[in-house]
Length: 605
Picture 1: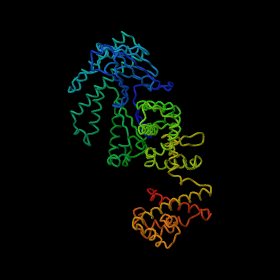
Picture 2: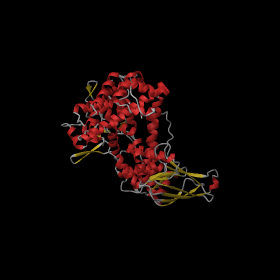
Picture 3: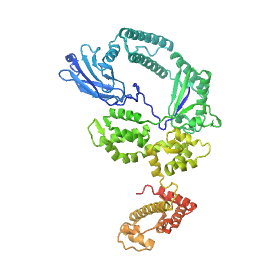
Picture 4: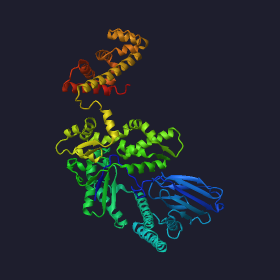
């Protein structure tokens, strides 16, 4: 089956540990104590390292000294129901759960056989017997990488069979529980596929010949290579995963040939052709933030090979337990702990969106670094509430990144989302057209939710962002609201224009700026300071001053005719001062004029 996974911001989390939402206290500390015997046998060994696996090169390491009497201890939170950790070089496979207490005895004269007691003693002793005795488990495959595929496959199978026989001897001897049986089986498979992938990678590099992949031969060569790989994998079906599929999709790729040319067409034609010839060879998954590659019926006026050919699945938002587990685990690796109430606040403020929540937690970590707090450090709910608005202000770029897909490719959906944020559910429903599929994207991306007959924005931070960014775009029903909006926007623009003119006169005339300014507008002022003179200028005078010295301002406003027209629109429509209800046409023109000045003066404080 082919699937399309569409997270709003794609991410992939790999873990060796099963998730279990019923288990609540993942942060409860594990204590591993121990004793080193015959420490004088390796006198240079002064400390031990406990490794908690994570992403490659990001594992957490705890280093503790070996005391004079040989004792040592580790304290850490596992943030999982069951986690595999290791004491480097001496006990590579230790299974722990939250709250466990283990005791590990390491004899430097017999380092292959650590003795483990305490919680899950039997399980840990058995896995270490299997993995470290040297009798039942051999990790490395010493097979030459320059062998031909047939010879390599024969030797690999012989080696793998030997390891299976040794594992079976272990199972027959110790009769471990099902968890150990599964773990040892997976351990052998991981080693098997690691050597196989390494061989294929090495061979591909050594025999790198792209001459077979000409425009005419590429599809044939690709199919031949897939068949060979399928055979090396003992006819097991191959799964191809194409992440960030928008980068190889027509209309969305950053590469010209993929975005506007026929590369995407030929690529999907090849995959579809091979799949239809023999669907047992491979299947594929595509993931990304944009489903246009399966929604567009044509590519370069040719039928899209995967149009409606895949089943889209949108990744859902995290619930409370998901957020708690993610934040606790990642924070734990950084020495951070969080009060329980923070998890609920994160869900409430950011709707369970993992990307936004991780960004907020990064801001918290930055504060801890700036304040030079000692770790482990616990972040309180009061600290979060105090900084909550500040966090959201710092999230504008992240929110714009999320909404960018709608802005660039689904403007209709973006406009609908704005309506919902600014004017509410009733106005949103009135904007929907019959059989309007725009809502499907908003629901799929988990941006909105339907509750009975009403719609809501699921992520408060996005709703607030839209309300602040488009605060003057809402539909005004009350005349007092219209007066307030017009006065607020006009005054803000006037103040910025006064500041702009004041800076230009000060720059060009220095100490004589005030006198020159007053002469220019043929107006006197009682205030003896330049600031006072600026405060007495209004829109008509501001327009005259700017047009008089247009060369100073043309980089900001560019079009002098448009500047004059929009200035007149604002000056003539002082509806708040005249207590006059503006027509819809007047409001439309006013809005255009305000936006013209607001965008031009955005950088001026």
